[in-house]
Length: 116
Length: 107
Image 1 (tube, rainbow over the protein chains, first blue to last red):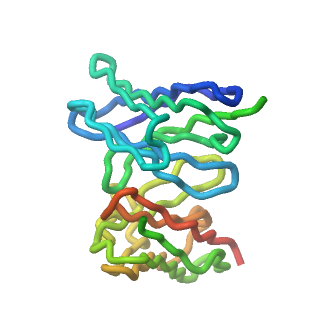
Image 2 (spheres, helix red, strand yellow):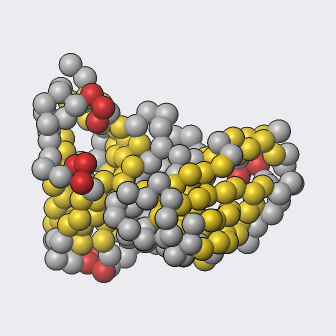
């Protein structure tokens, strides 16, 4: 069945960048878009954007425009999410999820901690 | 952006009882609404999409209803594994937005 495996936890300083990977397996990679959602500690869910695994088309939430980039590598079925100019309020668990209308399945999440 | 408001924030229910969770959109989202369950330390799990269609493998005790701006998730007979936080999400308009969650706790 479909499975998404994310890269491990990261600790970054303010102003740095982080790149999180999400490897897909168990389904035809190019048939789906991948969405990214984050969750700050003890908080709710925040949609960040999606990327088409077929052609790399992206759609980002306005609040991340200019410092968020999503890319894909179809040879390895991996999607990458890079967030730049990190701030302390970017500390969160970042999830990838398959689809854009009902996310299923989700990756296990990657904790990104931004601290000086 | 569309604001999703869930109520109540916390719902105390005894095992075997029925739970009814509400989600209201600040403007119509048609039937483009999903429900998720999240347990501590885990990723969310899709329960319902299209407002009323159960995702693969989801037990029949979970049901969704509504359209437009008012939606309901019903758990007909709560099992021990159902105590969790539940989120609604609209995907009718950009940005997609989530409700703040309803925690279902053991009474």
